[in-house]
Amino acid sequence: MGRPARARSKGTRRPQAPGRKAEKQVRRPDRAERVIAFIECLIVPSGEGQGGPFKLREWQKRFIRAIYEPHKSTGREWRRIVRRAILSIARKNGKTALIAALVLVHLVGPEAIQNGEIYSAANDREQAAQVFKMARQIVEADPELSALVRVIPSTKTLACYSNGSFYRAISAEAGTKHGFNPSLVIFDELAQAKDRELYDVLDTSMGARAEPLFVTISTQSNDPEHILSKLIDDGLSAKDQTIVCHLYEVPEEQEDIFDPKCWKLANPALGDFRDLDDLKAIAAKAQRMPAEEPKFRNLYLNQRVAPVASLISRAEWMACKGKAEFEDGEEVYLALDMSGVVDLTSLMMGSAGDLTRIRPYFWKPADLLKEHSNRDFGSGNLRYVEWHDGGWLDVSPGRSIDPQVVAFKIAELCQRYKVLGLAYDRWRINDLLRELDRIGLQAFQEGEKGDGLRLIPWGQGYRDMAPAIDALEFAVIERKLEHPSSPVLNWNMANAVATMDPAGNRKIDKNKARFRIDGAVTLAMLCGLKSRDRKDERKPEYQMLILG
Image 1 (cartoon, rainbow, N blue to C red):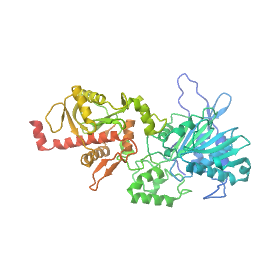
Image 2 (tube, one colour):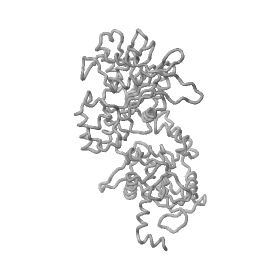
Image 3 (spheres, rainbow, N blue to C red):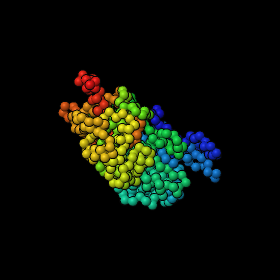
Image 4 (cartoon, rainbow, N blue to C red):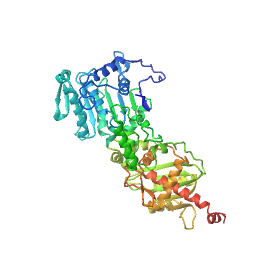
């Protein structure tokens, strides 16, 4: 079947910490093989192979072995090491059947325990019903299982009275989940979760079990800051032996995404029970209709891309990651997008040389940091708090952005560097100008006579933003831009979506963006100002003005 592009199994021995006795670890292939053997005795209830036994493919067996083989000793017994497993594959690769099979493995199969609680979690009732339906059909297709398991359709429950265990399909819509004590949780399509509340409740309720297991089977999220994206990145880092992560994806740098030869990287069942002609039809539609391409990339190539085309692709953006360091006294440009309460306030600094090294600054109201985290990322998600703790996000005292805080930062940068100009969005700019005047920072509007900081108003319509977007795009594609991989700016860039007028001019559209884009706006303004100044430098009248 071929190995996945980025499939990795944790469970290998980590370096021993100084002064710590190494834990003895072994692999128990017999335990994994019992799971495989049990699943392959189940009867396929519908679709291809109906009435015959399940036949696990090698990529599915690898995932099962990665979970159930690694063990360590507690001094009294050997226990399974893996506590969390992630399988990320494209749509229609048999995940529902695999979830249902694993449910039965833990309900009545070789992994069944006394009084086990097994849950399959989904984002809505319809999705939850699909997993329950498949598990129920498997039970009812087998007389031996039917004699062991009672089906309770009203609560989407399967109960095994011989060991006191039960399985239940739940969704985020179905009231409180507190009070659970799960031995196994399988989260179906976590990428579609609007917030992480259900995930966190289930994850934090497993501590009382000796060998808890949380399995996530999902396509990738389009949001690099989504809980699933974080889990995948952490799993692939190989830092935690209790985590297994198998990721099947077509790399974003793949030159021709419509070449069927690359599709199997994200679709391990392609040409098997994943129909090739069906995928070809979906690809052909995406090729004819550019608006369909992001969906094709996300759902069928399992790429971490937005459902609408981002201004800059993640692969192109991350290719520009670097140190982005500055020297005191060097020439720089600034761009500013002020906010009041809702948005991020963003100040962008960029070097004036051929390579645009950038340093972003962001602010949020201090008193609303947690509230805005819950609003933008879902209940219980403290992403803004984490970014602030990590030094990527500053705060302004109170419940709104105080222009004085931003004015002091601009003054600090003007003292340390030679600022050639500051492009600004006109929103709340008068408040900032008063603060600049109050702290004694000289400034003048472009086109007027004056000393100090040159201020350039930058409209957000097609006239000013079209050349700015062109300049940003050129800098990224030609690798003339270097950024420090700020998680706030990375998130903003992933959210930025451009709209086009009939003449082909583009602007960044806040109405079409799913999340905040303020950093992307200021970066485009900065690149636009720098590009415009460089063009002006080549004009004879500009050179005469400088010489005069």
